[in-house]
Length: 95
Image (cartoon, rainbow, N blue to C red; front, side, top):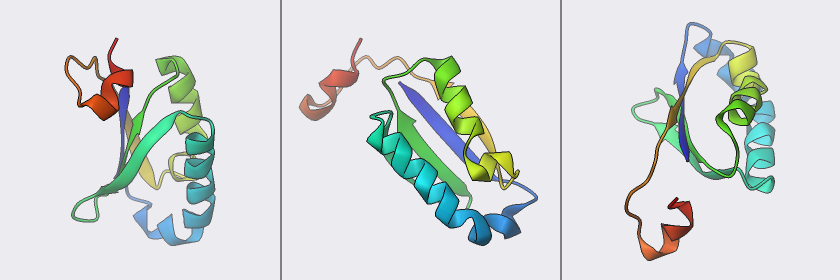
């Protein structure tokens, strides 16, 4: 699984104008079964996504299509996580 960090950059002021497109991109990720959870980094630092069900290469390509990433509203970082323990609801993430 992967943690995607989307931290605001120098173009943060453009977030409002691109928010609808960013939200459509997020919805597509959930519809495709790749995104599990998304939310805001506090305080107002950007966002984070828990992703699975894809290769790192496919996720890098997907993240590059986020309008926030493409327009440099955020800087992205993808962290690969190998889970060792999980709650009953999350055991599907275990290798």
